[in-house]
Image 1 (tube, rainbow, N blue to C red):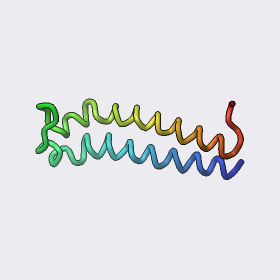
Image 2 (image 1 turned 30 degrees about the horizontal axis):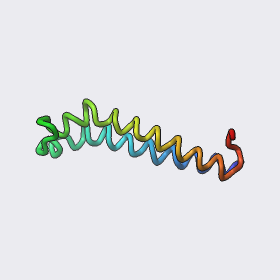
Image 3 (image 1 turned 90 degrees about the vertical axis):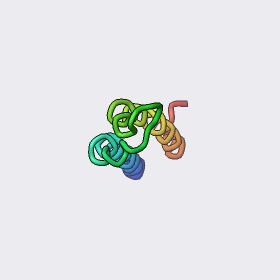
Length: 80
């Protein structure tokens, strides 16, 4: 069970790091460089700050669910 939780924490750290880079990095740190690119008429930095990080977060939730379902099956702790 200790190995199960180490995998779980590894997944969490990777996915939360991606979310941090997208929300903080793309929305705040690299906004000037990203604003040179336009997406649907809006500057890309603005788009990430307003909507992009939310979309990425929702996608990361689905990725986490898939990873955890696989991990549960691997360790025979799935609900089925």
